Structures are given as structure tokens and as C-alpha cells.
Length: 420
Image (cartoon, rainbow, N blue to C red; front, top):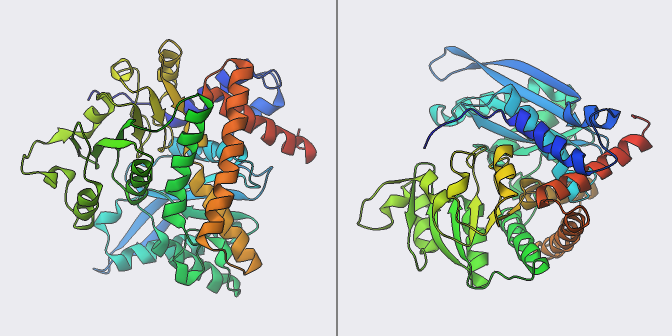
């Protein structure tokens, strides 16, 4: 695959600009536009960590607090060697918009650290996590700024961070971080509710488009836990997963892929190419171009660009990754009969479950998984209808409609607080 440098923050600004061209209450000469594209605060922190060999290594973190008009900041923590300032800013913008499009009382932010966690031992990783909390604990907390895990982070790391924060403030504070282990007062239904949310949103959009999941073929870029769970839910609705990838390779079966076998391979830390005896290593990016009804990019940004967009054969794209489609592709989209369900709607259900966890921590009362699923479906149905109605009203793409719905709510909160 050819590589083209795409600045995620510039992409986010372009998407907002295009939505503003349609939405009459937002234009580049208004304060709202300037306030929505610029993060409120960006921090860069260098954290020294003592390694197992007694040497000291310094790690750089970026932290973007985009907008807290709907309060408090809500964000994900990413551990990845390619983290950079612009990526973190972009992800914080998208978090503000996704919290608004699903209408929950949270703002947007993002943490990112330049590190390959596979190169650290577990004790080094824990020192790194706790060291960051020690450096920034005065700026976070249940009513200020609440993180959750993202790429290469997990409930165990959230548990370490929550424990460190609680020790520093001398108050047990489970609501300071979300997606914690259940034993540390995390929420029931984390992975299943999030994956079910993805299915609900594609199911609802298809219904509004007078279509259905039945007999649809599906290609999934990234065989993670939630992605595989979502695939099972889709198969229960008579959809067929015919292609799936990991970080390097992908496999294809024109009838269906055995998801149970894929799950076992991933649990054993094997490649999807071990699925069959035929050892044909297919680069994961080629999965994006196969003939399937629904394409699901579920890992990294900027995987569908002007370089491969015209080769996409799917009828629908469900963006589970943040920013997998670049703005130049959106321009091409307007000329093609492909419907993109944008990331700020499609993958917002992780933050919804995180919000449910915050509510439970605050109440010190914990919900059953069935109740979480009921509330999730209710919010998804409302959000999908809001976006689809806006799409029809403005004759826009679903992405532009989702941005308009989000910006209306953010601007209303900013005006109510006297920020504009």
C-alpha cells in the first residue's frame, strides 16, 4: 500500500469546515468555529521511569483537553510508538463531538504516550502508568477529567491509575477512571455492550435506509475482542463475516469465517494466517478493497484515502476506528453510492458505557448487564434518528449530519455558560 502522510488534526478541521458550510449557525467568521476547532488546553509531559535494569528512561506524553462546555472532559489513553501532538488533538476533537452526538453530559479530551508497551515488562508498565498520574493528578478526577483505555491500554492499567489517584487524594475514587476491572468497580457488560452498540447503530441506520443486515457480507479490519464479539452479534442477525484481519495479515472465505477459531488463535497469540494450512500472507490493507456489503475499519486512522478509495467495493462503511477515512475520501464519497456511518456515531458506544460506569461509581449502585443494554439501545436509536433526520434535512452525508447535530449541542452549552 502506498503511504501518504495525513495529519489527523488537519483532517478533523476539514471535516468541521465542510459541516459548517452546510450548517447556517456555524461559519469561519464566527467565534463558535474558532472555539470548536481549537483545544482548550494541551500539555506535554516527560515522565522518567526506572526500568528493571535500574536505568532510567524518559517517556513523553501528550494530553489534549478539547472542550468541557458539556463537562467534564472525557478521553481515552493511547500507548503507541507513533503517538504525536496532532493525533492527540484530533482525537480530543472527535471525542467532544461523539459525546455530543449521543447526547451525554461529557466533553472531549485525549491522552497519548510515545511508547511500544510490548517492549516493557509489566512492572515497567505499571511504573509508567502510576508516574503519569503522579505528574497530573491535580488536573484529573471524577468531576474534572475522566480517562479510559484505548489502543494498547486495558482495564488493568486503569485499575493501577485509579489506585494511584486514590492514594494521592486520600479518597477512594473509582469514578476517576473508567473501564476498570469489575473487582475495582468497573461496569458490567463492557465489551459486550460496546460491541452490541456497534451492531445496534448499523442495524438502525440500515432500517432508516429501508435495508437490513440479513444476508449482508462483512469484512472487518482488526480481530480484537470487541470486534469479534460484534461479529458474533451480526451473525445472529444472519449477516456473514467473510474477511477479517489482525495488525499484519488478513484471511478471506467467500462463505463465512469461523469466528470461534479466530478467537482461539488470537487467545494463543497467533496470526489469523494460521486459520488454515494454506499459509498465504495477505497484507491487511488489501482487505479494504474486497467485495463485501459492509466494510468495518476498526483499528487506526487514515486507512482509506484518495489512494485506495476508488477501489472500495462495499456499499456501507462502519467506522469503528477514529478517523479511518480521510476528508479527500469524503469528497469522492459524494460521487459514489457508498454510505459511511461516521466514527463519531459508529464508535461512540464505548464512551456511552464509560459514562454509565461513571454514573454507577457516583451512585455507588451497580446495574445489571441487561439494564445497560436497554439504556444503550434507547440512546442509539435516538442518536441514529437525529443524525439521519439531519442528513435528510440538509441533503448531506451522514458524517456532515453527525457533525451538525454535535456542534448544535456544543454551541448551545457554550452559549448557556457565557463562553460565546
